[in-house]
Image 1 (spheres, rainbow, N blue to C red):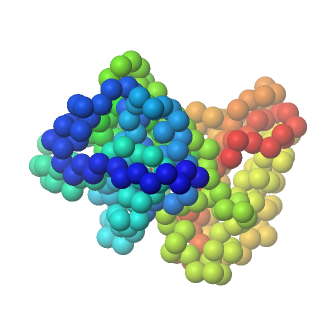
Image 2: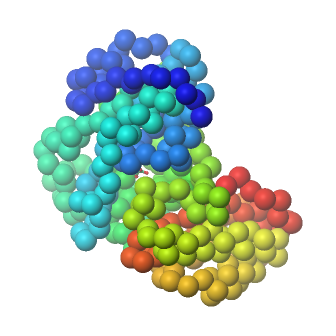
Length: 308
Ligand code: PAF
């Protein structure tokens, strides 16, 4: 971890952001976040720093986006830890922290999920599967705010964690399908491997809600995914069977979904060519806290570990 002390410039308005970015040369690399930054976010900022180089600029956005939370979700209790977040950004070498208020991002008010008088991003049919089947409207909210951030920051690259893998796939589609580009060339979307605790639990802002017992139980999610990886050489059905067997030995884990999908999240046939890249994905509640995780698989060949 970098120890250099550095204070990022904080921009709270569109005008302040434009003014600070106007003075900068080099590539602009964006790390979009909802704050409550943990070591996983810190690694994204470090990655952004490397990508931007000494000439470029790293912008971290901190914005809890109401449009991606459904009724009854944790928008009001989502952790807000701005001072600590600023320390993380400074320590990891961010140049600018963009932390707008809700009415700066949505000056005409936050659109409702079914708003027909406003322009929002239609994320397509993948957005109603997996996470989207449990959280209707979530990805419309995510892609709409990410599109706004791209419009305001105009980054040359943006970094997203693979932990929110479906989000990453949809953002890549957003950029390809709506032809986004950066200030100096194509907009590069960088997926960063999931950062994990020593027992395999994927780092998440929501982990802080888990009590000791729940925290212990939550490690089962990654064990289930690693079981799928171990048997991935025998194909997707065997991988899923192994994952389900591991899940049966877990206690206090209330499953939303457990699936093996192609790397682009399309459905897989039962038989696939050796070397097919895939993803095992899980979502479950542990003590009422909803957690998601996923790992990369290579089907039909012996497992050699993985990138997360
Ligand atoms: O992954 C997140 O933290 C959010 O979904 C994002 C991309 C910052 C959009 O609000």
